[in-house]
Amino acid sequence: MTNVDENKLMTFVGQVIGDWGALASAPLVVIGDQLGLYRAMADGKPVTAAQLAERTSTAERYIREWLAAQAASGYLAYDGDGRYHLEPEQAIALTDESSPACVLGGFEAFTAAIRIAPRLAEAFRTGAGVGWHEHEASLFRGTARFFRPGYAANLTESWLPALDGVTAKLTAGGRVADVGCGHGYSTMLMAGEYPASTFTGYDYHPESIEAARKLSAETGVTDRVDFEVATAKDFPGRDFDLITYFDCLHDMGDPVGALAHARSALAPDGTVMLVEPYAGDNVSDNLNPLGRLFYSASTLICTPASLSQEVGAALGAQAGESRLREVANQAGFSRFRRATETPFNLILEARP
Image (cartoon, rainbow, N blue to C red):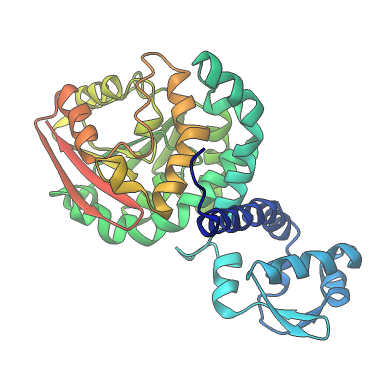
């Protein structure tokens, strides 16, 4: 029998205990978000369980336990004598959905995603896929909330300006297709910045398109935004100046076919923008906390979604720039470059 290093063993067990705590804490964050518990503490003033329960019309005994669990997780501060408060930084991350530091969507999405585990275990045995549409609605909503802060912070400020000549076209009045738009936040952000252009968001998921239409009506951009149910390989329209894919190409069963269709729908000097999770080209490049997050999401959501579709290329959320370049080249694009990046995303430009 191989000799066991007891120190290494206990270090690993300690790591697992931390992971158990994170797993158990995640649904409590979702509850805190849904019930407005964090928002009721956003002023940073110390509160007791009884005071917070009164503010939020909840039961004091549950709130007392929830507060202790949140303090043990480091998600709020304990002042002693049964009083707790949110630090300013915690308040931003847990209440301010306009901040790129907001974490609420991630908790909602991943808590929903793990509920597919029994179905996914069977897919592991058979190799079958599990479609995006087969998940529950909180995954769709949580994913939209997860990505929105990063898009709001970067899309119009740095990502679009990094593309060759695109912002000039959009300022003058261009045509944009946002493929795999989900709830449409990316589409609406672009429309808000470029009122002279027209934008169409496409997604195969009818419930997401319905949500996008409702949201666009609330944001006042319906004069230049439409949302339609269509797949990445059959969306209508021609002569688009810009076609975008926000964190979705790797989920598609046939990414080559999707980009080939985009190429046929582009104007002669049009541009495709791919926003993909940040990744190196090799597994060893991604063995870090961000890679852990994206590989896990890819196993739960992205790879099964691709395998449920025709071709089933299953690029995965950590495909990396080189593999994505191959896909674009196979689809007929001759120019491909990394336009810019963030710690979380690669922003790639493809042109005919």
